[in-house]
Length: 216
Ligand code: G3H
Image (cartoon, rainbow, N blue to C red; front, side):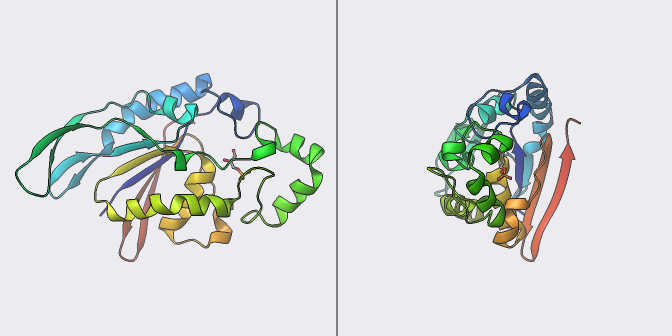
């Protein structure tokens, strides 16, 4: 079966201050998670057609996911193309993908939930009553995120290579709900805790899941 590894970035400076969005780097705790993930990532080798294949590594374009990827090594592997003749070597460098960037909170980017409630009380209420459809002023909704992740989810459906995604809670909620077959309405409430790696094996009748906590 195919294998996907999902993890959020390690704790960021903004996480420690309760702020959403932004583009901050990792806190010391987040750096520790990155180091542990680097060691653990040796397990990103999976067996496909009897051959050991390391997982592709995808991050978002934001600092906190790239910093979380920094201790994962990039093996060079031999790639055999379909014509059966050409051989090449590819280095498994992380690929930063913009559609993996966190749900953009627009005018509320960089605020705490308390600040949003004080400054934009109507917005705060509207989001609570329909989290899936609610769009931040000048920002995005979970529905927008579902749309921008669709091509990526289809790419993941087609590939046979294992993939490891270092992403964000909002983004991983949607991908998780997609592969686990959850209802869209429930996706914005899925808990994707920090410091865990989720391993998903989608198969014909569902999806097997394993969670590993690397730092508590
Ligand atoms: O840090 C913020 C989360 O990634 C998204 O959280 O959609 O539950 O506000 P929320």
